[in-house]
View 1 (tube, rainbow, N blue to C red):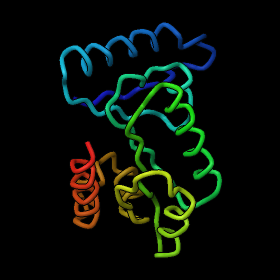
View 2 (view 1 turned 90 degrees about the horizontal axis):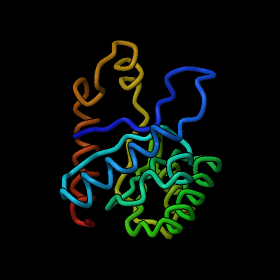
View 3 (view 1 turned 180 degrees about the vertical axis):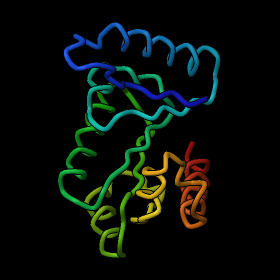
View 4 (view 1 turned 90 degrees about the vertical axis):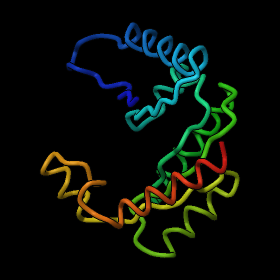
Length: 156
């Protein structure tokens, strides 16, 4: 099951609180009571952690680009996740172009497990333009995702 969490449908539409309450309870029901496997694709940012929408998840994969803003956001996510008693918070490097990019992520986030890295790939942009999944148009992307999933399975 895939849930897209936190999409605001309309500008000026008011508070997203009722939707977050429903999502929080749905996630708790699926993950805790039914023990379902659920992948939640959250919008970038800290909103979901501030509202506690993801408080019952088993693992949180934090996607980090090789730059200080992204690294600082990962640290803030870790603090909020610890406030929610999340045990498994892991890093996936994204838009990595070199070994130096990998090193920047890994050295700055030593207190996180690193699941792997996704290379910067122009085919991701192409897939977005075409409304397709990048996973379906490039074998490199498939292999990087498989590597990350294998590492995730070892950790949870």
